[in-house]
Length: 152
Image (cartoon, rainbow, N blue to C red; front, side, top):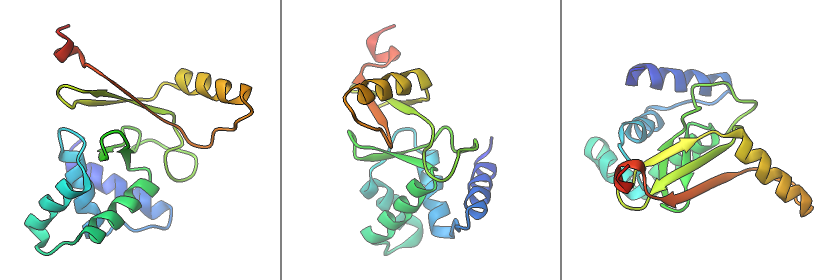
């Protein structure tokens, strides 16, 4: 799918929820989508300043918070960076990230892959339930070597 179509689809998804993908939010989403690896807020801010001049940190953080709330991006806590949601084009129940997601993060090259393995989520929910804990939200980040860096 081309970039314009992805951005239009994101705008339609937001509109269906009564939210608006403003030009600034759209531009931040485009930067995240175009990135080859997850980007931190300040790297995004630097890119945004190329087109918007005096953009300040609160500007980028508000846009990122909105994109997170709409389920269009994920925040990788380990990297303190943002990556597109591979399921953003699919229907979720409600807002946000209602699908199970796990991330494989290569410690050598930084490549990041999002998995949506329901079996992993069910196993973790079952383990949590045995401990008397009810899971409301789950993000799993695994660090290691990608196939290219591992030599296989």
